[in-house]
Image (tube, rainbow, N blue to C red; front, top):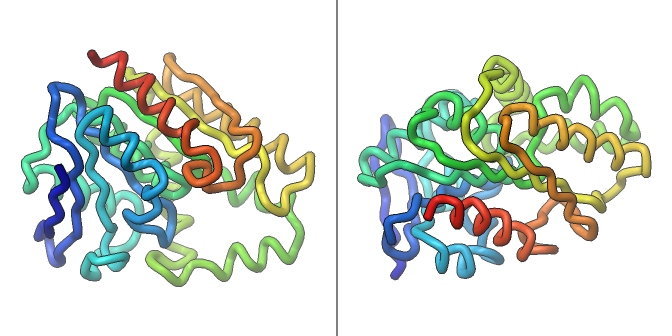
Length: 242
């Protein structure tokens, strides 16, 4: 069963797609990467909806959702998602799944609303110290291209502010966390790839119950290249809740 609808939050309507009916298990909430929207999960959504109810949505200004006048920082996006879940009557607990920048949002959600969350899957998620520690290891050309990409939702400053907000959430989570790291990133040298995997491993420090999985053949969009890795991680957490 698939329901598509819009939810009015603060000053805009957000598009929501809810798949499957609740089976007594947590609802799986999925957040796409920077500039991406719900379609980013097309390759895995069918399999995931066999596990439990799944909610995917378009953040403000993306896909079918209206623009918001609120700042495009993670903290605002997390507030908007919480409001969406309350208004759509999607009851916790939730398993949160975030890709890339969506991982930043989901980590902040998990610390802001700890009682709502029972698991976290981070799919090649952006580390909080990406700009200071990782970006300088890449070519000037890569850095220029990276800095120019911020035109779809938040601008460069808002994106970096989101990473600062993430640094402020250094609370130990009491939920299981699975971190998926892309093992074959485009334009990465061996050194950069090694550093990336190491920084992904460090994300596990947010929980006493963490696991790193390196998707050896995947570029950044693990859900497209090795969808089974993403489905398997979500299934693992979902099975623990039964």
